[in-house]
Length: 126
Image (cartoon, rainbow, N blue to C red; front, top):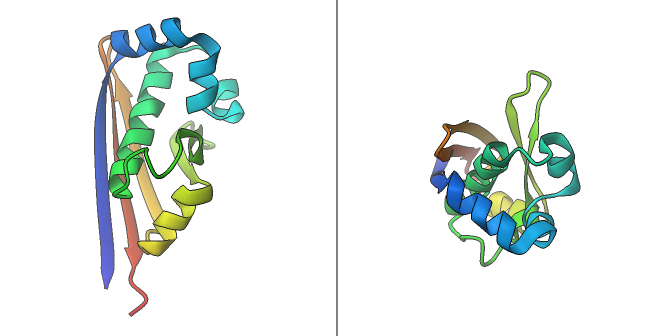
């Protein structure tokens, strides 16, 4: 039997930028992996979209960020610059326990908002 789980999140870019300005590098390094920061740099809209993706994935996993950490959800660029999702640690274990093995991720942003939509698909073992 197929299993499907979705998540979506919307971020106000100005509020996200305020958080970066208040907490500086500590915030960025708590939320993003080194590879994410190397790819995106300080492009606030792209960082906000990745932040939204992390929230969306945590919703699809049914945990929120409390049981998994920000850095266990990693969003990098694929060969065609498409967003590619990598799960580590507890996030990967949770996905496996839900039989979610294939992920589709879409990111978008305007000047004011960043949005992410994620779909996890798997086959139950039964």
